[in-house]
Image (cartoon, rainbow, N blue to C red; front, side, top):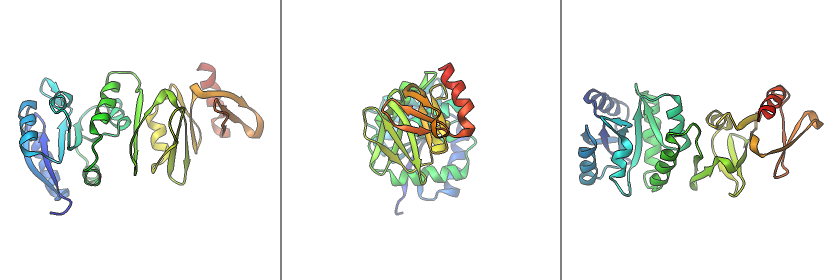
Amino acid sequence: MKNSLRALLVDDETTARITLSRILKMYCPEVEIVGEAGNIIDAGKLIQQLEPEIVFLDIRIGQHTGFDLLEMIKQPSFQLVFVTAYDQYALQAFEYSALDYLLKPIDPDRLIYVVQKSIKERNNHQLSGRLQAMRNDWDKNEPETIVVNNDQGYHFIPLSGLMRLSSDRGTTAFHSESQPVITVAKNIGEFAKMLPESSFFRCHQSHVINLRWVSSYLFQDGGTIIMRDKTPIPLARARREDFIKRIKKF
């Protein structure tokens, strides 16, 4: 079948594999399930033997994690989708790293989206870098890196050097200290929810700033924030009180 994906399911719960298999067959006929594994040893062998194009991997597999399996594979050449019952913070870790995930119980619409995205990106070979970004941030209170993707590829942006985000017509631009501006076809609101509240602040419907990069706040024009690179950023009247409280604490 054109645009089909050869898939391997890895989960230590048999019922979870049966459920995912049934939903895939029902909603994603373009996915061909070529194998299943209930532990990381069998999964590693099947990946070598079957060379799947996509692996649905439970983050917890018995006493191991999905990362233990991935460490057995030096250069992953497949698309990866984590299947998890984790809380919101863990889901943010996937999002920071631009890794796809399915939350149990599985939402068919989310599954369809993930499969279609994987088909489009099947020739992308930057999985190792995205996995490393997630591993680095997994056990920390806050992430150090956010990974975003556009038609040029995946971009790894250190949050300490991310000065601000700006939006225009449904796209979001990332302005960093040491990288060219990176534009992504995604609404700024999605990133505003992901970024650590301790240092990032949405000061306007079209702007999110890193408080560490604020140089001054001017009362002119209803309120203007000056960043350290001299860029003036408007402050929405409704956000002024919150901004002043945040900057004082900061």
